[in-house]
Length: 290
Image (cartoon, rainbow, N blue to C red; front, side):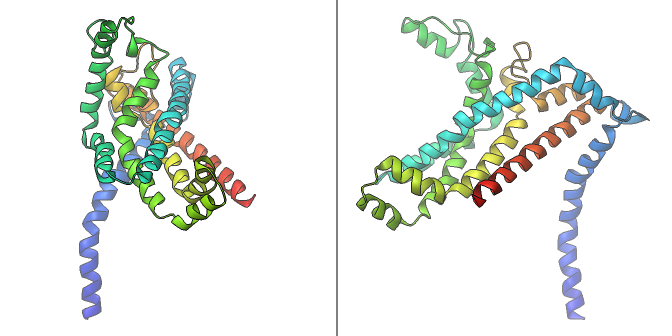
């Protein structure tokens, strides 16, 4: 009887959480997938459309540019947002004094709300003579820049903004991994005459490779779901130069009121991420075998 009561009391505690998880996560997910196969009026299914919504989305020239933009985002993200935290973590880990101060300093931007951070950097990157950075450039005798109005710069600047806000948490994760490395390995390498780069390449990278792989997957997944920063800073412009898949899905849903197309684009984004993840794990498995 006591065991039965314990089991029931456990379920009483678990069921509300499971219900909330289903209601707020799985139910919208399933409904979104279903709606992607229907013609809709508002957010209600009207008639079965099959794959027509998917065809409409894929054949739209905006989708082709948006998908290209997503891979450009990934490129800049791996170049800036992925490499910088590793370098910063290694530098902080090598410090003998002030580690706590620098850990707090790099993590502080993560406490700034995403919208506020986007508005801050939008103000700094404002084109024309009124932007803060352009005022500084003018004072130094340099020509003003178009910044977010320049199609060649806008994605890089958005990634810079995202990195500034988010890299602190990543740095702390890398620091935790670095501090778990046995320092005897570094001492032995130093005795053998290995320089800093050799120790970093032969000891540090292999020891934190699992963390690097995990962060790479999370980084790419996060980049494909970028939404707030392009919406606030550029609204996907200029001329769709910074449009993302999630922002395009938002425009379908809340500007064109085409819920079917919006859900179809969401499913396509999920499939792209799934394919990239499978490719990564297969390559990682192959490299580990070798």
